[in-house]
Image (cartoon, rainbow, N blue to C red):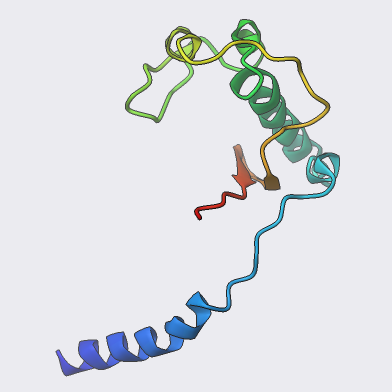
Length: 127
């Protein structure tokens, strides 16, 4: 127990200054650069996810969902039904098609691709 308390105290002391020394996360100035990869498969995966987010999710063009989602698409949000039709029916309640812009309008920071996974990271102001 003493070891646990000492470790907790040490970790707490060393992490406190970091809470005040955080650097501001800023969006990428050029989103197209984020799509590049030396690996053609990873680059294609990045472009697929970027296109989905840009056109379907953010752009509200649910009619294009079949270009990005398979019929048996697995949804991990427990509030949204699984499958492409479930996704489309759920988000149809909340979105209207918007003009497609040149890039994602949200403050995109990075795109990371590894194997068959792609992660889009966005900045968010919590003030």
